[in-house]
Length: 216
Length: 216
DNA sequence: TAGATGTATATTGTATACAATCCAGGACCA
DNA sequence: TGGTCCTGGATTGTATACAATATACATCTA
Image (cartoon, rainbow over all chains, first blue to last red; front, top):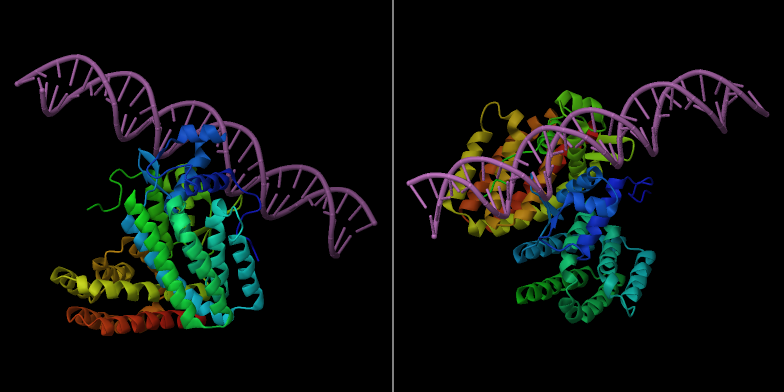
């Protein structure tokens, strides 16, 4: 099994990863223009690999490139966030349904371990990653790699906004409780209960995030 | 309303479009390696814009790039084709459900016009485009642009294989009949009938394509 | 002969240099 | 004043040149 990451990584790939991280963590904010010469100099590379990285990020939807004007960090409108959650709803409930019958004890144990990590005192900075991992572990037994990759991309886009602490604090405990119940339903192979809880889980997360977006 | 295409197109964009077309039409076949110098010379450009185009196509899933080894035209396994159809099923039935109540007479007329085009004697070479346009027109009133773009990407990937004439001939008449009925159900706002027909339509297309893939 | 190791050549990856384009701000005019 | 047309600097887009890497083949060794 291949991790998907090339052993010998090219500068362009490293730069793409780094810029993506900066966008996800908010170091690069939505709407902010990216000056190629400046950023390339800061990273100690030429503009060529940076430009290739930007082309890739543009295709992934993290930046928007306009000819001869340059790249800006992509912004998500509330409408777009709602649509992304809608897509999640359709695809994740489907994957969960497929996954539950295929789950092994190993998978359930991995979910337990992940839940422990979520309860770690200073989880907040890593919450985005750990939360996605939880969902990923649940869906892996469904054996739908393309869908999973697609969902990861969506999660990444949404996570930029979930980092707004307002949302974090209010939805955090609820998320933990729901994750806990989800594992229980998976363990008892109760597909309807699990799917319906997941549906509520996603809708609630969406509601919280969108409310906080509308507030500011 | 913006077409999405930049007025002043850069060489890299034109090359990306051209290479994508060559892949979709089978001029570049799955698994075939892409030699940068050779292709760049053939197109009369340098390798820089070609490389940027390849990075974009890689992110879209049309080519696979391995460091220091180059790009090869992506291949789809039967398992992957099945998964793509599964995603279509989930997302397209959802979009249709949303779209039907929002459809106007204009939309229905556009569907009629498209159907006429499908009946054109030598539609075969343009079938991929026209077929997608049919589905796109149906889903546009749902007003879910991100989902629609995602589905277009999936359609493009599948179309490469739908061009195998075997499938074409056998599934062609059926597709026409089903498209016709779909319009009728949309016109009478019969959501359950339309959705269930669309579901069968997608499943049948998948079945035909996969059967012909397994044959060869 | 089979396998390992070195070397030449092809190919990709990156830096530098230059061309094309955009944009802010000033000159000019009605 | 307000609008239009320049113009120069900033920025992006592309070509060329060079560096890094991979692959095929020859050579060597046991």
